[in-house]
Image (cartoon, rainbow, N blue to C red):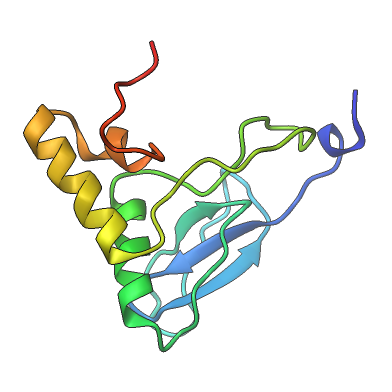
Length: 123
């Protein structure tokens, strides 16, 4: 077993309205609230790299990804051999995946997690 399996790490929680993110301890009984607007924070995952606050376009992409229920996290839960999963970073990438989801009749969350929106899902 690795070291990361025994240590608890703080996860990123984001407020898309205020365009801020915070690292906080995870817990089922813990309520995560934005200190600016008092709205609930959205869990963005351990590997979330927040864009700058003034970058409204990048935050709109983050809002779309988090609204679909996706998080920014790697493959393994322990931290070893982590490869971050793909998430769109620009509006053009988001637009291409949403168009591919509409054409294929798939849920947007499925195409947002693919590096190439036209490749079929691995089953």
